[in-house]
Amino acid sequence: MGRFDDGLFHLKLANRYSKKDDYFGARAEYMKAVDCFKQAEATKELEQATKEYEEFVKSDPIFRELVNVLLIGIKREPGILQSQITSKFESGEWSDIYKKGRPILKDDIYYALYFADKFGIVKRIKKGRSYELFVGEKEINEVLLTSLEEKNKSSKTIKRIAIPLVVLALVFGLIFLILKTPLGAVALGFVFLLVIGSFSSLLK
Image 1 (spheres, rainbow, N blue to C red):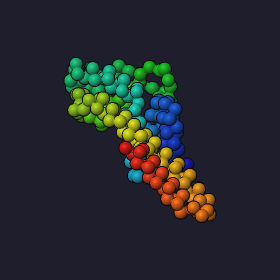
Image 2 (spheres, helix red, strand yellow; image 1 turned 180 degrees about the horizontal axis):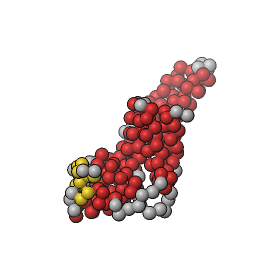
Image 3 (cartoon, rainbow, N blue to C red; image 1 turned 90 degrees about the vertical axis):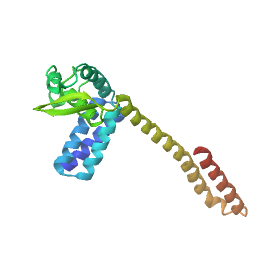
């Protein structure tokens, strides 16, 4: 497979892991998908994969816990270098990211700080080969709760739409039978009113 096909493969795996709440596996696969699309210069797919990855991070409890702990240190020592923090952790192999119950690795810290900076929770300023770390303009709950509210809103929208669609499917399935009877026109008008009432009540 080429890098583009690899990207599609890893993105599919990331979605699968995410649905199973396997946050370590999902993170690793999203990283691979983004990297593959970059190498393939697939702009559209890269944007989509990046967006999905960012939304996943906002729902990742591991990200939340890491950032909460890191913020304590950054608040106590504004301007602390990222390298001062990562030096306290071991490096790991790529495959180690998938493992549960393992010690925190340098890659976990890079992951947390990169996205915390991207979301405005932490501010990183380049200094030499590292970054100075400061508290960002946004609170962590502001970023993560916004993501959760969007998911809940989307879920409610799907529920509101799904039921009327089922009603419509039943209606159109019966139309052919109704129109064959003398009272077809009257019955069809009655059913139409029921459908409109269903939409109105669900969208309140």
